[in-house]
Amino acid sequence: MRNTKRRYGVLIVGLWAVLSWQACAPDVKAESTDEVTSEVSVPQPEAEAQTDAAVLDTGDNAWMMTSAALVLFMTAPGLALFYSGLVRKKNVLGVMMQCVFLMGLMSVVWALWGYSLAFGEGGTWLGNFDHVALRGVQSEWVDGQPVVPMSGTIPTLTFMLFQGMFIVITPALICGAFAERMKFSTMVVFMILWATLVYCPLCHWVWGGGLLAFEAGQPTVSAGALDFAGGTVVHISSGVSALICALLIGKRLGHGSEPMPPHNLTYTAVGAAMLWVGWFGFNAGSELAADGIAASAFAVTHFGAAAGALAWAGMEWITRGKPSILGTCSGLVAGLVCVTPAAGFVQPISGMLMGLAAGVVCFFACTAIKNKFGYDDSLDAFGVHGVGGTLGAILTGVFATRAVNDIGDGKTLGLIEAVAAQTPGDTVLVAQIIATAISWVLAAVVTFILLKVLDATMGLRVSQEEEIEGLDFSQHGEEGYIFI
Amino acid sequence: MKKIEAIIRHFKLEDVKNALSEQGVRGMTITEVRGFGRQKGHTEMYRGTEYEVDLVPKIKIEIAVAAEKCQSVIDTIVRSAGTGQVGDGKIFVSDLTQAVRIRTGEAGRDAV
Image (tube, rainbow over the protein chains, first blue to last red):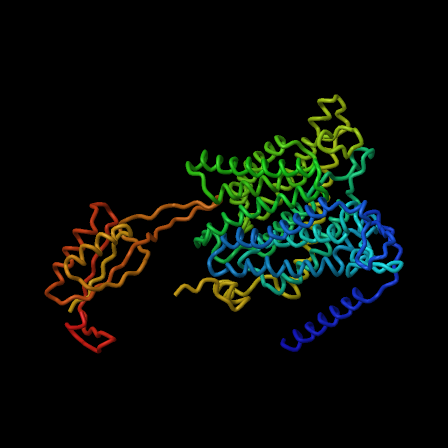
């Protein structure tokens, strides 16, 4: 066993060395045919990195770098606290380790090949390898000076970083489904493969000019998806994959008979608040600029969270007589998930209505429906992200309006607007539903195959003893709270 | 010597401590415990899953006393810790075979 681990270690370090050398070696400037990036160089006597001052907008870049930081903050401490508070004490570090380790792992994957597969020009199905190890993204020496590739008004580096934070958080969301019982080593391999085979393709399809890219002027059925910040790419993909994980990995030992209440809801509450704040970067940052649409997306995000919080708490108040902090936090997250695809396409009050709907629908998904079907989606990754994301994608097709974002070249967008303008055919709703279905299928099928293969080779679950002992010690050799 | 263990309600700790001090009891050990007796627990709900929580938080006080003081200490605790409601707690008395003051090595009644 030790020999195998050593061999893997040498292999990984070797690969790393080769790729790093590749990245740092002086390169001949390759012809970049990306639609997304454009090389701009202005002959200047100074030897500092030059970007065309007329193209780079410092406001946009400042906002986008801030947004990238906000989104990373959502994974840890945000999600790390939110999730770890919900598990039993003996697994608190296990959850945190998953979040923090994935920050590192997914970032490396993104830099080495993920960005290239997602946003390389490629074709309908996938990007290409033009940007492996960030070639064409990082600065280059061209015609006697450093040049920073640009993506619109921001450096491509900023764009790559912002998008990279999304591939970090998406796998971390899935961890909610298999909390307290998945083998760490298998999780690592699973996430590398999932990111490469589910996230990157889906990201390319929706945002990289691929299969689901929105094209104004297309017939409504094949128009592509309106996904502003990741309803399909992040929430549906992670939520549906989470459901498959929960079903295949099976329930926690003692689920249904042993009490497993959250060991620290104070963490969960603090984590939820961090998610709300971070989500402004997630949604408003997806405009890739600090403009009016970003401000509108910010508003949609905020009021979606607000309504979601009230809605779930309200449902508890009505059905059980007491609103809870867990319900309020779950509701605000559900609201945020729901408005994620809609953020830059709907009005703030529409966002509020969507948040309200999500609070109610996800409340039922996480209580009545989960109990009825009996699956152990431990932290409700499917109930909130899968269901909320699906609801959001469809409602985007209802509420989207050209008044916020004229992505349709003057055509009406959402169903409400189309009906009001008496052009009921000009609506994105059908395309939204189709895109949602395609996302579901990709996530479900690939996740299923990956899990089956990994179960046969590495094993998905820890042993019974390890599960009873707790992942903190069995997987990581640590204890979360030493209070003597 | 006797060892007295008293399980009492959390919020009664200050009252019991003060009453015992007034009586000349110079030391005690406090632990936070959970338990149940006739006082039933309650149901908590977390996102659609109900939990019967029948372990109720209490405070345990342990005191070592000379045998002749035992009854008066018990009376003091009963008086200061009681509310008349189910869940007031219990007192257990056992024989203490030895007690030692670590600093000086004094043993027996002098250590209590």
